[in-house]
Amino acid sequence: MVKAVKGLPAEWGACFRTVIYDGSVRGLASWKDTIVVGLSSGEIITLDGTTGSQTAILSGHTNFVRALTFSSDGTSLVSGSDDMAIKFWDVQTGGVVKSFYGHTNCILSVAISADYTIIASGSRDKTLRLWDIQTEGCHHVVGHQDWVERVSFSPIHSQHLITTSGNMIRQWNIDGHQINPSYPGSCAVFSLDGTQLVLCQGADILVWSPGSGVAMAKFRIPDSTASRCCISPDGKLVAVAAKDHTAYIWDITGSDPHLVEIFAGHTNEISSLVFPSTSSLITSSWDKSVRFWQVGTPSVDPLVGQPKSTPPASPPIKSITLHTKDGVFVSIDSAGIVKIWDISTGHCKTSLQTPAKDANWVDVRLVNGRPILVWYTKGQIPIWDMENQKPIRAITLTRGIVYNIRLSEDGSKVFCLKDRELWVWFTRTGEFVGKIVVEMVYIQTSLIVNGTRVWVYSPYSPTCNEWDLGIPGSSSSQLPQTTLLHLSHTKLWDIGSSRIEDTATGKLVLQLGGRFAKPVDVQLDGQYFLARYQSGEVLILDFNHVILW
Image (tube, rainbow, N blue to C red):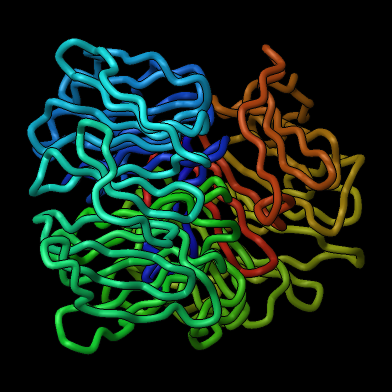
C-alpha cells in the first residue's frame, strides 16, 4: 500500500511532497517526469514527477528491488533485485522484455551502455557482470574483493564504465579489463553529457574532467561524510547524501563551488537521490519514505523535528475536519485562526480569525460554503456564524469533563463527549436531542460524524464504538462494526502503533508506527484518513490513489 504524508503549513520548506511506503525503499531512478521506486515487496512503483500521483505498478520481482536505471531515451528500464534477477522493462507497456540470470547474491546496481547493447550489474556476490541485451548472455564476469555497490557507464564512451566496491572506484572497459589506477571513494557518477565525473571521498566531493583527469572543483560536507551523489541535468548542481540523513546541494558553475541548499527531513540513511529536473530533487531512505524537494526554497520540512533552519513557530493546531466533497479540510489553531486547505495542492485558500482562542475543544464545519464554528469554554458551547461574525446561540452544559465536540456534516447538530456520555443538540434551536452512554473514554478521544453515524474511539482503546442516531427523537442503537474503508469502518488501535483492520477478512489495512503512531485526533470518510499529532503535524492518507503536497 502506498500512502501520502502531508505536513502543515505547506508553504514552509523545500520538502513539498513525502510518500510513505509499507516496506523499505531502496531503488530510485528518474527520467524527465517519470519516477520509479523499488520496494522491499519486489514491486516497482512509477510516479508522476510533477503531480506525485502513482501511475503504475510493475510486478515481476519477488524480493527487494535495490537497483533501477532508465535508458537515456526513457523507453526502457532495467531493475535488479534480491531475487538475483535482472529485468529489462518496456516503460510504455510495463511489461518485462527480457530477464537475466547468473548472479548468486543480491543485485545492488545496474546500468545501460549509451549504445543500448550492454547491461552492467554489480552484486553482493562480489562480481561485476556484463550482459548482452540482445542474446541475454553474460559475456564477462569481473571479480572484486568486496560487494560491487555501484556501476555506471560513461555517456560518451559506451565501452567504458566505473564500479564502486569496498570504498574503491575502478574504471573498466567492456572486455572486463581495468583501465587507469584505482582510487578511493564511496560513489562516482557521470553528468548526462559525460563531461563531468563527481566523486565522493569521505567528506570531500571532487568534480573531475573524465577526459583530462583534472580536478575541476573540490568541496566538503560539513560535519559528516558522503554516501551518494548525483548531478543535475544541466550539470550545474551536485547533490550529495550524507551519513547524517541530510542532502546537500552545491552550485558548481563558478570557480568556487558554494552550498545552496540543505535538505533535512529523513530519519534514517538516504538510500538514493536523483534530479528529475534542475529545480527539484527526489530522495529515498531507509525510513520508508520518498521525499520531493524544491530547489531554491527554504530548507525546512514540517514533517520532521528540528530542521537545519527553524521557521517562526506557528500556534499548534487544535482541530481538523474533513470536507471531501468540497476538496478541502479545515484546521483551527490555539490562536483561534481557522484555515481552509486545498487537499490536492496543500495551499491555504482562506485564513480567518475567530473568537475561539485557547479553546481545548473546537470544530468548524462548512455548511453550504459557510463556516460554522463551535468551541467549549467556561461551561458553554458557543455556536458562531463566521461569515457574518456573530453568534447563533450558546449551549449550556452541566458540570463534567469535556473530551471532544463536533458538528454534524450538515451543521444541524452539535455533539459533545462529556464524562462517559455522548450528548447531542440541535444547532439552531439548542434543543436537546439525547445522549448515549460511552463505556471507554480517554483524554485523547476522537469523534467522527458522518450523516447520522457517529464513531467514538481513542488510541488507548482496542476497539471503536459506532452508533446510528437515526431520525431525531428515535432511540439510538449500536451497530455492528464493519469495514472502515467503506465508511462503516472498524478501527482497531493498539498501544504504541495505530492499526486499521478489516474485521470481515482480518486483513491489516493500515498500520502507523514510530512517529506517526497514536495521533491525538483522527477524522476519516470513504476516501481520506486525516490525523493530527501533538507536534502540530497533520497526516493525510488517500485510500484510493496517492495525492501529494
